[in-house]
Image (cartoon, rainbow, N blue to C red; front, side):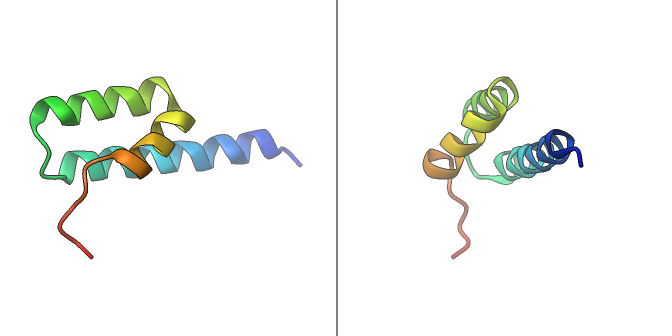
Length: 60
């Protein structure tokens, strides 16, 4: 079984989810661009950094 392809797909889905959440956040346009670039350039690390330090939404 090919685990690399499955792992790549999971990372892609997680990155798309993160970018959608960044775009929907209340952060400034500049912050949104920086977070999106970070997630795209460093897919795994960018996602992890965004989860811990990214813009927070008003949801609980």
